[in-house]
Image 1 (cartoon, one colour):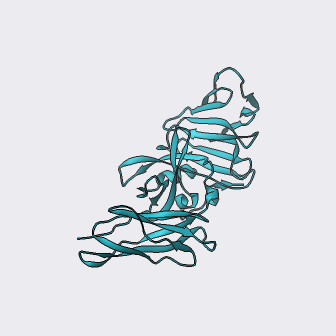
Image 2: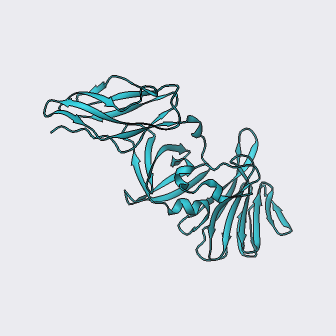
Image 3: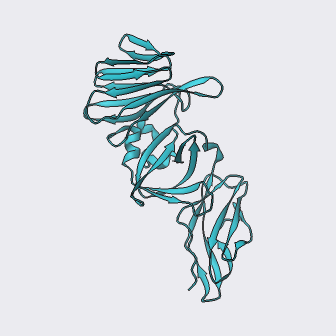
Length: 306
C-alpha cells in the first residue's frame, strides 16, 4: 500500500528565499501541494531526483512575513489505491537577520531521544538594564548581566546575599577593591565567598558553597574594536531561577529536518512547536532558537531589572 509521510518539523523558508519539500515514494504517479497560500508562496512542479524521490521548491513572495504562513499537505495519485493524502506540516517564514552570532549557549535534555542537545539564543534589552541570568535560592546566589548596548554585556555581577563580585571590562571589583585585567600572568585569589583565577582575557569564578557551578567570564570583541563580556557555566543542572533556570526547566523534543544537508529543524518546547536552525561556531554547534519560544508564556521582561 502506498503512503506519503512528511516530517512533523515545520518547513522554514527565509523571507525572499526558498526551501525544498522533499519526499520519497513508491507507487506514486503524481502529487500536488494543497493548502499553500498563493499570495505568500509559489510552489514549483515536482522535481524528480531519482526513481523514488524528488522535491517541490517553495519560494516566498514579497507579501510573506515572519511566522506561520500555511499548513500544507500532499495529495498524490497512486497505482495501488487511487488518491492518498499525506499528513500536514506548517510552513514558517523566517528572517535571515536573526541568524547572527548567538550569545547564550545551553545544554538541555531531549526527552524524545533521551539525550542532550545544545541550544543557543540571544537576549535583547536597553543599554544599562540588568538581565537575571541565573539564580539559586540556597545559598542565595543571583548572577546578573548588565547590557552595554542592545544585547552585548559589559558587566557580570555575582550577588551572594549582601556581597557582590563585579566583573567588568576593566577588571574585578569587590567593595572598594578593584583588580585590573592582567596582561601576561595568572592570579588566583579568594575574596569573601568567592575564589577566582584571572588571566588577561578570562576569569573563572567559584562560589564557596554547595551545588553552584563554576562561572567563566571572558572578554570578547564584536565589530572592529568594541569589547563585551561572555559568561559560561560548567553546568546548568543546579541552576533554579533566572533566564537560564527557566530555559532549563522546559521539556524539549528535537526534530531534525528530513531535507538532506538542511540546517533547519524544529524543537517542541513544552506544547509549542518552534523552528530552529543548526549553527556551527568554531568547534561548537547548537540549535539557534527565538527566545520568545523558550520563555512562553513568560517574556524577557520578567528577567530584566532597570
